[in-house]
Length: 288
Ligand SMILES: *[C@@H]1O[C@H](CO)[C@@H](O)[C@H](O)[C@H]1NC(C)=O
Image 1: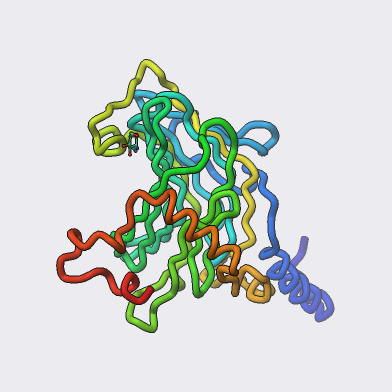
Image 2: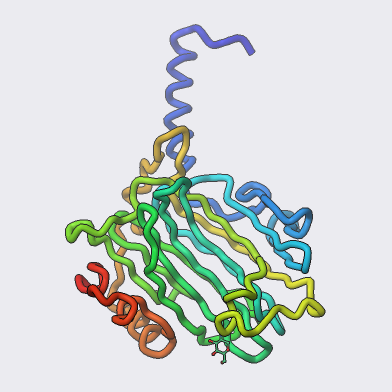
């Protein structure tokens, strides 16, 4: 088509690009073909069922992984995962958001496998401007290998809320007022990988991966992102900043579930690890 030179045509183009910006940001119910790229694993990562299911696998030669096609700056991102069943000791399924570069931001879910019948550990962390060391770990109140469960990250300018099946387990608040950097300027991609970490993952590396049980498989479905998509250097947040998630914080029910999860299922909290921080706990722990 020839380049549009008439004034009406140019006006039409302006209007349609404004519309594209708005529509680009609305919630997209997932199709893995459209939403992610399998980035490594030489065929061990697979998109199945017309884009409705994704599986990663790990064997002695390699793990596998995928990443989102889009980068996001804030969003409410849900994914359902079913983790490696049986003896998954030594395996790690990581599901996280990350930006690029040495002062990157990152929001992590990591699932550390275990012997059959022993509980997975759900590890969480938040990096801002290259600094992490903010681990909180949980057991789960169900067997995460039997069924799909929903793992969500709500990331807006004031909070990063981690939820499992809609129950908040962690709320990392924006404490910039107290000098704690908060991830809010660098767009992040979604990444996931299944890999071998038997040098540290299970009981601190004591239990090794049983390769006779390979291949190990983790499955994903129902990816859903209500998010501000980053494109050509700007966030097209547009109408999203009027969406409820953009200003959401925990309500009374959310606070109740958070207390419940932290009381009954939390197994490590950097904010109470006084031995690790002899000079004093990190500021955000004291501010909370
Ligand atoms: C595995 O199970 C053991 C025994 O219940 C537990 O101590 C450990 O924290 C579990 N998780 C990992 C990742 O080792």
